[in-house]
Length: 453
Image (tube, rainbow, N blue to C red):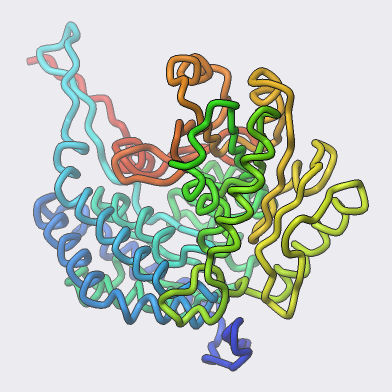
């Protein structure tokens, strides 16, 4: 078993040292998950929902503790960490309240005396999760998946191992049977072997496009269902009649929350010419108003990036775009894992900051002549996670719904996840859905039952 250290990205201090699980340990955990799965699936749904309520209550009790852990491991501003834990409690409460109805048999009128669709759990589900929202990404998968009667193995990002282990303990403390939810510490080779194992019935990944292609390939070769939530370079479209006084804070937050490290962040700002100068002035002032500094300070809005190599990669994307003609009007300074809030103008569709995913506090701004050009440019992307449009002309905005090929389209608000609504993307942003009814039905067998008496 190989040791690895976790370092605080803000202080550089070593937080903890962990060992990777070897094959024997991983398969022991899988065996435990398989052994408990039948009795877990046979538990009354109201009892599983009660355990989920217990999780929600513990999350609220421990929100400061968990937020501090996230801040130490990946640099999340602590106030945003608290908000993340509160959102995790929300998704647990949502499914605790609604799972029984969402999983109920669906009656169908046919020639049979009785026919319906039964929703049965698939079995043990493997989740591969990222570091940027280390609790939320996991809970939005685990809450519906476990409540549907599945068991789960979590392979979390290495740099948030403490969060991974804390989530496993959270479920145990809430009263879940041992083996129902387990964390594994492994490399990519072990994950590929695990996907191939007959005990794993499906796999879900939130992560990069590269990781998604690898997971999907292995799952496909083994005829396993997969759900992929991958990257995005969401467009924030600002038409000439947008109410900047009301929404400029939303636009800035859409780019800079979580220090810009969000798949659904507004990454490309596409601004109609008539409002462009006013937007630049107000947007720049709003970005400058965000407090930058120690992520442990509750007033800090922008801290450090999760790792220095990520800041280096972002710096290269920005510099390559500058070399192609982009202009820096704010920021573009790096010190270790810190990257200053940055605004680039004169951005064209050929530049890395336009066509690639920029995972950090960099806003790329493009001026367009009119609404039609704005929509055309916004949809010019390999990704399809979400788009947002700011305008007072709601009727015309609603006419654009069919023209936006993404998984989400938000009018006068930032793209965000909500337990009541399905979440997922199209194109290189992946497939499948999390949250809402669609999320809890991703990992069930929709079984046709046909009865003649």
